[in-house]
Length: 185
Image (cartoon, rainbow, N blue to C red; front, side, top):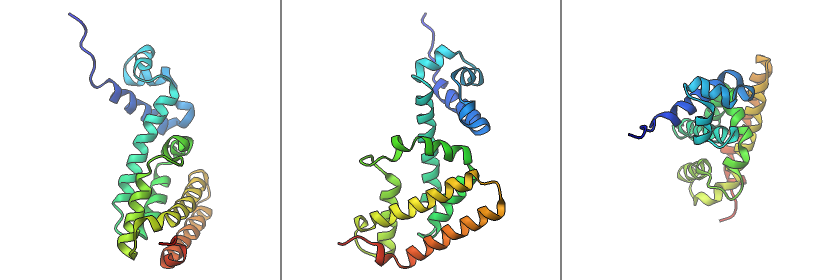
């Protein structure tokens, strides 16, 4: 009788990978370490994931979905940047992985569900078609991403608070004067 495949193996591998990534970041994600933490062998991990980068991308996709879940739960347009920064600060290793996987997750031409959703939220709040909000969504994202990156590596609470405040104040101003930043209809 042939062996019964382990239906939960991929999930165990990703759960173990997440624990290792969260605890040690980039240096903690080795295929041997993942196999050990998942209770399997290195060749078995290779059967599910071609290499370490494939595991990283699978994790990054999960982290992106978690970030989206947090953002999509925002109670208002002004709450979105706050949720973004809070997620990054609460999950610095995960945010670093998103940063490392940027080209695969957010490259031009790729579907960007966060941008589509944020544009729709702005259109619902301020009027007009969602497409007119693409540039302002990009601007807010880039402002928040830059700040989030600095917050996740910053060690001084006072400096982090100042950066966070500057970012959120700027985001609030952009949103308050959104008509200036909307692209033509």
